[in-house]
Image 1 (cartoon, helix red, strand yellow):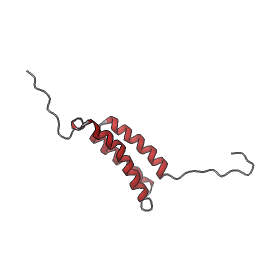
Image 2 (cartoon, helix red, strand yellow):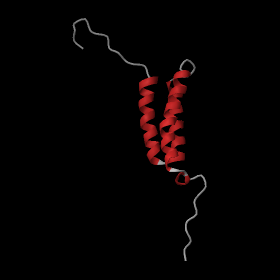
Image 3 (cartoon, one colour):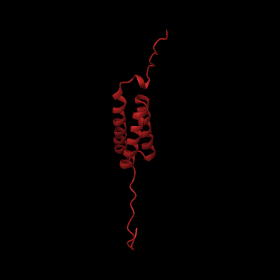
Image 4 (cartoon, helix red, strand yellow):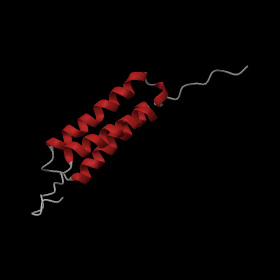
Length: 96
């Protein structure tokens, strides 16, 4: 008779269901907070690495679904809070 498969320690499937999803929301928020607080010290490339690291941690803990949520949330938060806005000055003729 075949025995049941043994769980692999540290595997994402061993974690409770909600941990990965909660981390998928919290990790990008923490990365945003760190990026905003350390803005005078770091540039945009360091912020991008920080968000990438947060997404990798979420993927290791929660799997594919939470990692996709973390990458989407991280990308939106990074774009909104940590990039400079490009504004176009109005032209003298009134056309844009």
